Image (cartoon, rainbow, N blue to C red; front, top):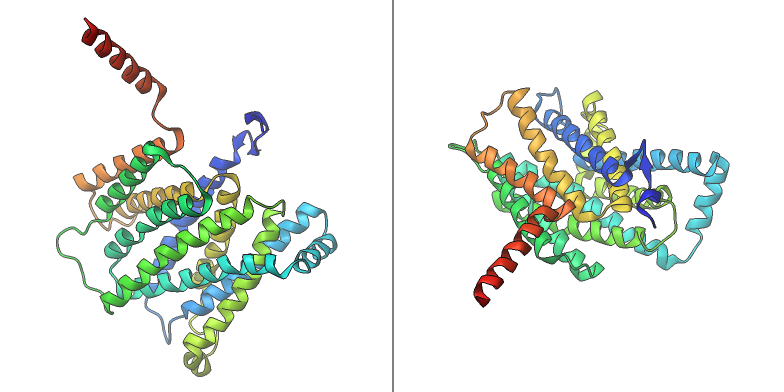
Amino acid sequence: MAKSDAPNFLGIPMKWVSLLMLVAQTVSVVFAMRLSRTLAVEGPRYLNTTAVFFSEVMKLTCSFIFLSNEVGDPAAAVKTVKSTFSRSGVELLKVSVPSLLYTVQNNLLFIALSNLSGAVYQVTYQLKILTTAVLSVIILGKALGTTKWCSLLILTTGVALIQMPRGEVKEVHGDPMVGLAAVLSACFTSGLAGVYLEKILKQTDSSIWMRNIQLAFFGGILAFAGCFLQDGAKIAENGFMQGYSMLVWAVIALQAIGGLVVAAVLKYADNILKCFGNALSIVISCLMSSVLLQEFQPDMLFVLGTLCVLVATTLYSLGVPNSLLRLTSDKAKVEDALAKV
């Protein structure tokens, strides 16, 4: 396909539009979720399992609306859904795999944040970038090359520097070992689900919204079962929607939108680029925490980490600048000429 024929929005390639949307959504959901889990509430706090379920339901609804717009009307969308779900059971099982992985991942992150400090969680969770890269090579057969591997290493180092604990770190209640196991498991499920979904999306002609309907359908069923398996007693005591507020619904909406944006990134870009968008979101979140919330003062480690992330993102997306390549090539030619003298 010619470069000019690539999907775009207002002249901007969808690859970058979807990435910018991902960054904006990730920053928003971080602040909303933090407030929802830290603000004092009267009575029991909302259950993360039910929040994951409602997020899948909302994603299913949004995907159907977009599919209806794509095919012309709701009746045609229903026909398309029926036709897709009536196909081979093997194809449906393929879609259920990333649905299960994403459902497990979303619940694991709540467990991790309940047992680890924010700094430890942020640093450890960046391992998903490396797991994604390795799984992309293994499952998709990608050849990343030296430059991209170096950019992944620089990115991981930069984000680690930004999130490195400074001075005394306030301890959080919970079991650190449980939290560590949860976040490491989430890193693996995140990488595997993303790479597997990328493979499915790029091997089929099905609409991206149809794929999201399938993912949300299976994800909703699995999440609903998880609600009663994990929190059945709490639901029986205080109800399925205990502790819900407008802020909680905002978190659910942002999570649902996030699933759609991630799918768009995988469709128009690739899964590792999605990881870079998430890392960039962390940088922006730190800046907003410093400027708006005034939670910390940026230091040299923060500045150095930010530079590492920006350099890594540029290297992965654009590669080594041609001017630098020409300079290196010219230098090598001069050295060879001098050696022959």
